[in-house]
Image 1 (cartoon, helix red, strand yellow):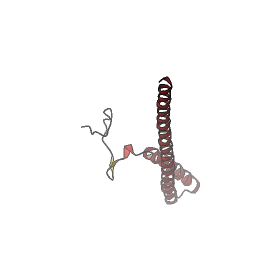
Image 2 (cartoon, rainbow, N blue to C red; image 1 turned 60 degrees about the horizontal axis):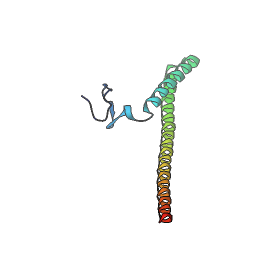
Image 3 (spheres, one colour; image 1 turned 60 degrees about the vertical axis):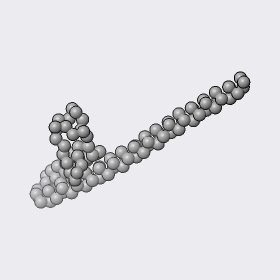
Image 4 (cartoon, rainbow, N blue to C red; image 1 turned 120 degrees about the vertical axis):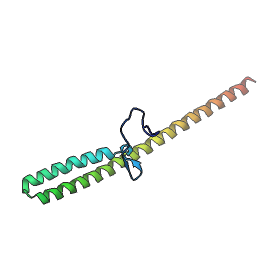
Length: 116
């Protein structure tokens, strides 16, 4: 059963969290993956140096949370920044098309007046 929001090629089920499909949230996947990788790495390194399981677990969870949140904020910031830049560029393109069209119409009107 397909929903209108998903692509027809996508046969997997929607993963809903707080009423939103988290597969479509920008930067979510990368931030969670980077958080997991950093948590595992930090936990292993801490365990290798201290041999304390509880400390290694706390460091791993702290690293996971910190990296996930930091990367998600950075990624969303750059996403929004790029989105505003693209919107501004599209507006400039529309304005220049409009002024060119107006300029062309004015030139045509002047030529018609000169011919008459």
